[in-house]
Length: 203
Image (tube, rainbow, N blue to C red; front, side, top):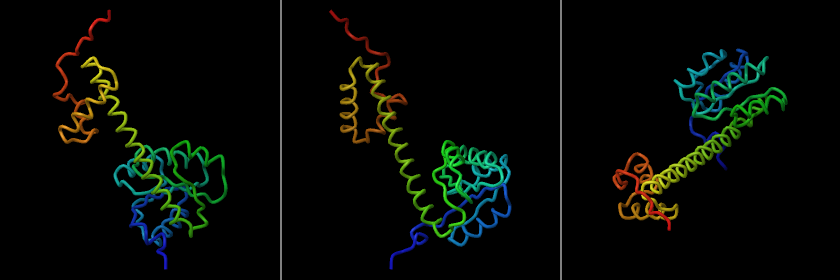
């Protein structure tokens, strides 16, 4: 027998937010039934940001209550503070709200009536969120290497290819990862001369 989605997902710490207390109670019951922990139940927009920053949830579920503006404000505050994906719970189709929520950083929307699909949806969102962070890290590493190359080009009066070759050679000789060496250069590595080298005048 294949393992269920809940078997594959570890115990999660979940923040739930909605302006309706009755919906919070229903969502909390489903989350607990899936084997996860509800670490916070928030209604007030002003409170949800600090709670998110303090509790550091694995995932946040935001329900659309009476006011779409209230729900969007909740999403804004959570996304601003969270290192976790935000999922919107919808009671009925609302394409305009989904579009607005997506612009604020929501990773997915699911029906709050079809609770049987929640776990698989959460699994997919967590996977996508991990991929997103890995991609962000890759872009960050690339930007750091480009910055280090720029410093070498300026300090040694060399072209981009030579700067990259210098990075690779020092990485090999020092037995260090390229990204670690790039970080050291940006922070002021010893291989840089104290003053920029003046390029020879062209004839």
